[in-house]
Amino acid sequence: MPDAVTHLCSGLLAHIPGVPAGAHRWAPVFVAGAVLPDILSRAPSTALGMVHSHLIPLPSLLLYCWGPLHLPSGILLYSLALTMLFPVFQRRAVLTALLAGATLHVLLDLTQRHVGLGYPLLVPFSSRDFEWGLVGSEASVPWAPWFALVTLALWGWLHRKKQPSPPGTPPVGEEDARRPEAEG
Ligand SMILES: [Zn+2]
Image 1 (cartoon, rainbow, N blue to C red):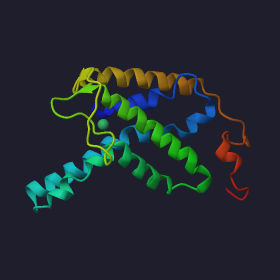
Image 2: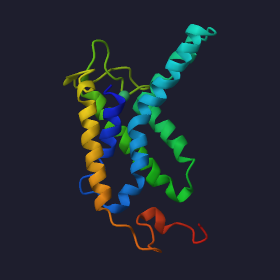
Image 3: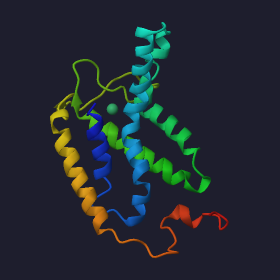
Image 4: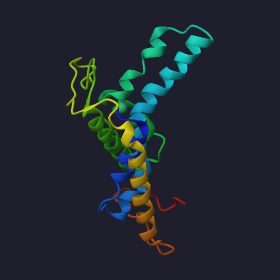
């Protein structure tokens, strides 16, 4: 996998060039979608692995069951679950943003070349693995600080140019058209 900084920056950069103002409303959700596959699949196994090594033995299933959250089927399931945390009129936009960010994440991961297996994208229907193998699995790490600087500069420039909306301007977006009038 590319490093976390690269995934974070790629999510931020994907919202910069020529994106309509309304789409930026969901930029944080898109960026979350771009980083969650690694966080949800690796953070729990790492934390539980430390508990297993230093405190109490844990079942191996508990240590290794998180991997599918990095694959399309797992991404779809947790994205649907997270979408339920939002009001009904926002769920379609949230799900779209989460899945778009996750798609960017998976596409970046697929560019890599691993010594062992690639990514079994069709789990649970097939265990056949796939990757394009264009770059090494650690190739993004030396570039990550520069990538972060470029991203920060572009976002700073973008938000400096951004004009504040006049008071009382209705939000842009189809989901907002369905917002209940009583909504505050
Ligand atoms: Zn990944």
